[in-house]
Every structure is written in structure tokens, then in C-alpha cells.
Image (tube, rainbow, N blue to C red; front, side, top):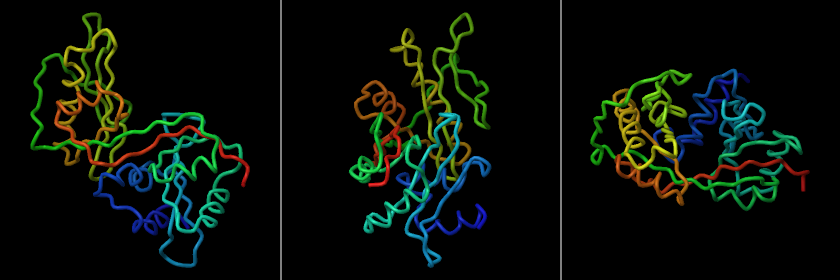
Length: 241
């Protein structure tokens, strides 16, 4: 079965229009074919109960980004599916709903774990920030970065798109420590939000719930909490229990 056929068979497991499924939908349906492997839960039915996506990304060249949906009502089958897809000792970066955490800690040795809240731009709260210091720069993908440079040309604040699907685009921001508190992070994020909206997508923003400055920045732009959370985990698969 080729990748387009696999993608078609798992569509009933994800809602591309729902922000809670947005990143899993991106990796399942839109990540480049030559850097994507998807394994479906073995079944005789045309409607598998789960899938695992392993994606090569620029985030880490040596560990795949793993996203999934598993038939948690059948723990034995879920365990067999994990070990059919990955081998013990395999290092991964896993993005998972927090409901999976107890089982993740059974299957994997966790090296790092970070919870993130998913925010979505509320267009009724969004007012573009006009800052003449913001310019476009190349980002290495089809989306530009929005940047502010210091007088010597160094980028001191930037916002870029991590990924995009048909309905959403996730925005990331970074401001150099010595330049924080000036509103420049808000300026580059707001400008990129306008760019994303004009291209028919809703901006998303993933943030650690304890990162108050980042949360405040997002709220000033007009992002609101969707109530959805994900956990980013660096882990190594244990021997099969």
C-alpha cells in the first residue's frame, strides 16, 4: 500500500478542522512524502483503529518525530503495534496527548518531557500591530520569517511558521534576551499572523503553561486557549514488557 492510500485509510481518525488534531493531521497528511512513514494498526477492516507517523524533520536529524492515535481500549494490541513499528533502543521525539502519558512511561525511558497548551488566534480580538522595524526574511520553507534587526543587522526578534496544513499554521517566536520587553516579539508575531490569515489559515501557538512572558505575548496578539494540550517527549523505547 502506498503512502496516499495509507493516508486515505486513516482519515476517519483525525479531524483536520479541529485544532486538537491539527499537528497530527499535518504529519499524517501534509508532511513531505519522502520524509514520512505511516504505519496503520493491523486490521482486516478498511477502518484501522490507530496509526503511527514517523517523520524526519529539521528539528532533529537523528530522531524521528512521532505522532499517533492508538486503540487504547485494547492495551495488548496497542503494545504489539508499538513494537511492530519501532525497535527497542530506538530514540524518538514524541508528540502525544497527555492521556497517553501513563502508557508512554511504561513503553519508553523518558529523557525530557514538556507540556504545551495550544492557543488559536481569535480574529475578533486580533488587531494588527504596525511596526516599521518588521521586515520579511527567508526561512528555509515557503513561509517567510518576520524579523526585527539591530542596527548592526543582527536578527533580535523573529517569528516563523513551524508547519502548515490546509486549515492551520503554527507560529513560533524568539526574541534575544537583551531585547525583550520592547514589544518586538508581539510585533513580529502579529505581522506573521496577518500574513497567515491572508492565506486562509488560522494561526496556532503552542506554549508551555508556565512560560508567562510567552503566554502574555500571545494573549496581547489575540490568541486564546483552545483547552487542548500536547506533551513533547524525548524518549527511548524500552525492551518489550
